[in-house]
Image 1 (cartoon, protein in one colour):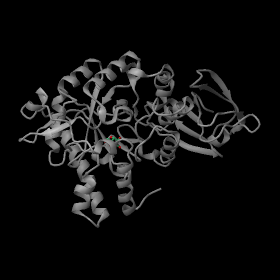
Image 2: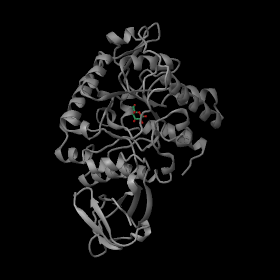
Image 3: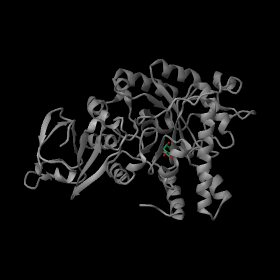
Image 4: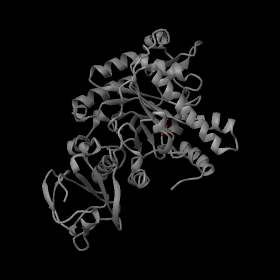
Length: 428
Ligand code: GAL
C-alpha cells in the first residue's frame, strides 16, 4: 500500500514516537563527551582519497549483528567487544555474520572545530574498531542527517563530510543513517506545506552523505533508515544506498514480525546485488518469540534476501537460538548470489507459500502458517502445480536436514507461526 505524502508525515512522526526504545532514551542527555585519542586527530589524518572507485560493497545481503534491538541506549564499548568475541566463539562469523554495528547513543559532542567526539560509553572508537577488525570482523556505526539522532544525540547535519572522514579515519565499514530529527528540523521547516519538496529535501540529504562516504575512498555500506517513507526502493539505489528500511521498527513479537513480512510483497523487483530491501534487523532470540516464531522469522527474512543483522544478547544466547542463527542451509538461501527476493505464490487461509529462485536453477519454498495449527483432520495441501512444478520433487527440508519427496497436493500438518523450508536443487 502506498501512503500519501501527508499521511506519511503523520506516519513517520507516529513511528518515531512509537519506536519501542527511542522514547526512553529521548529524555536522556548525551553522556559527557570524552574525546577518544583518535577522534581528536581525525580531521588532520583524513583517510587518503582513492583515485579508483572503491570495491563494491553489499553484493550479498549484509550479515552481522546490531546493538539496538537488545541493548538500545545502554550499549557500551564492552558490549560491542563482548558481542564481537561471541560472534567468533559461537561460529556466527564463520557462518557469515561479519558486521558488528553500533547503533544510536555512541555520540558525544562537537568541539570548536566541529569534530564529533564519542561519549564516555565509547572511550576510543579507533581502538574499538581495531579490536573488531582483529577478530576478522567489520564494524558499523550510526548517525542521522538531522541535528539529532532518534535518541537525541548529535546528528550529522552540516557536518556530513567531516563525519564521513571521521568514520573512515576510525576504520568504519558500515553506516546506518536514520532520518529522525531531520523531519521537523529541516523538511518541515523548509517546506512546511509542500510534501513533494520535503521528499526532495530528504533524498538530497541521503545523497549528500552517500557522496561524502564515497569521497573518503573507503568502502562503506550505506544503510538508509527512513522507515520506508516515499518508496525508497525507487530512489535509494541510484544514490548508492545499499539497503533501505521498508517499514517502521520491528519489535520482538509475532504480530509485528508478520505485519512487516506482509509489507514486503511486491518489493521483490527492487532487490539485487548491492541494493536490498531491509525489513529491519532480526529479533531472533529476543522478547517472547517462541522457537517456532524465531524459526519462521529467520526463514522468511532469508527468503526475502534481507540483511541478516542479529539483534540478540549474544553472551547469553541459548543453544537453540544459536542453532537457528547458524543454520547454514537457511543462510545459503539468504546469501544466494542471484539475489532474487521471494514472492508469495499463494495462500490457503492463514497458510502462505512463498518461493524464491536460486542460482543454478534451484528453488526455495517456504510454507508459513501465519495463524492457527493445521491438524491432520484439515491439513494444508501443498499445491506444486500452482508453483509451476510438475510431478514429484526431490527436496531438502532445511530445518530437519532430511531429504524428502514433495508430491502434488500432499497433506501437511503445521503449527501456527511455524514454517517449513525446502530447497529443490533441480525443480521439474
Ligand atoms: C529508530 C530506528 C531503530 C534504531 C533507533 C535508534 O529510528 O528505526 O532501528 O536505530 O532509531 O534511536
